[in-house]
Length: 213
Image (cartoon, rainbow, N blue to C red):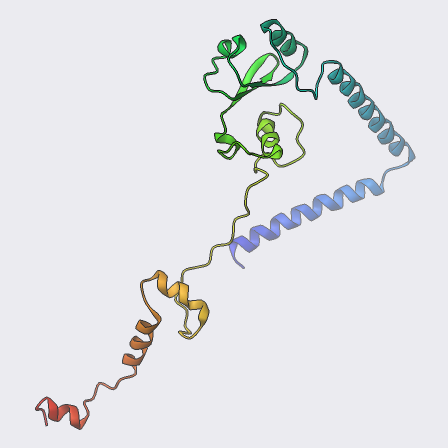
């Protein structure tokens, strides 16, 4: 067994043990435990609903213009997380030392934690998707994000690489690309194989031609 297979078995075993432990814990729950879990879940949902009301009262989920500098400071004081889109020259832009337009400033607790400058981080194009922008903003937990922050939504899956080897069968069509990678042609391989099959002994005709008879 290889080291990779051994490690894979260890990981699989650990996952199975964790799943078994969770199942056992669920099986051992009594009525009181279930009631406590239900009550805890209800409290969590109520808390989330209250937070949503606070966000809505602070105009979360809306795209608003902030023509005055005072409005800018009012917004970042009311909300923990703010996404600011600078697309023209404004006083807040200068205060935050933003030189490139457009720029998106990400604010947490009244402090700018990150900037998305131009389109470079959005695929280097101005027709990026909403999902791509959402993923980039989520890098600093400024918004809730359900996806994988480590992988852009438009990332292409990597194709497995084939080993560059010359295989035994010279008539195998799958060998063409591998042979060319090493600078050989199919004819070269055939010729080399044919030469290996030649006898080292001279024929009578060859000996006569060379004056060795």
